[in-house]
Image 1 (tube, rainbow, N blue to C red):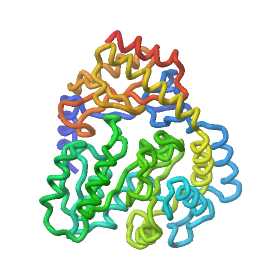
Image 2: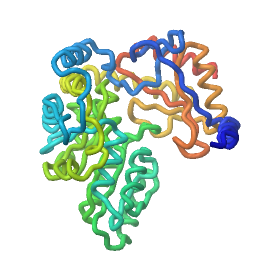
Image 3: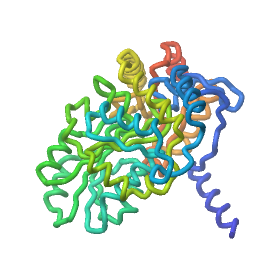
Length: 383
């Protein structure tokens, strides 16, 4: 291996302000964490409801270890299909009001596995330009024709669909909440267009699950589109405070994925303790009206104050609140300055976001206090 080439590439990244390093957290996740020996307020986490360190979920995990051990031992098609997996899938299907659910070991594996199983070289996938990288990688793996439409631009999507050549399968795929912008997909319009042009719809609910909707089921529920979206994918690693992902849809869809999805077939099953813990998290989410209400209050307050201070929060309408900085080096400098004041906010830079749109990505939790939010705002004023 020519390490000189690798070193030069890394130096180039550093000069552009997009070189990345790891920071070590030595505490449970929460509104406050220990970051490299220092207690700081955490405005980076996707643990929206504060469940990652919830005593009820930890108790369920410990009990599951005693009953089922640690690992699943094999893929689910060999001998790794265990009771906690099937019970969590049944709970998820009821929660999402679909015929069936299927677990995946991560959100990345779910998106790559679902899309690459359903689509092939004769298919066309229409993807929002700001969709998560795992969606794009799934499309590439499928060998389908990728057609990206400008972010949330429904006239552009309609034009592409109208002029689309004949294809074996057509799929429109979108995040429901966009992870770096914090805005919502125009899902009703997407579903209407899909019906008119005979396309399937897949929605990634990763950042909406547990957060949006009266029951916390996601944007599909909030907009009353249950039964109209072909594939609902989501994760258990954000608002649920656990780990793993799911696909929800018809029984035929899930049977198909069991037989065709390589990321499901060729990986060891999720540890049963995580499935058991996620069932308890799902129960909390179902009863979590007060948590969701507090989360929304925190997000609305912070966004309004940031707008008053003159920061550009883009089109955020969720607990993900970006502060547009544009320049990557400046975003990194701002992040470091906030950290010196005891506040952890990550700078998000290309290629995670488009060029010249570097930002600070704030994420709000239901467990943040008013004092926490004001401390963040006071620190931001110094920038």
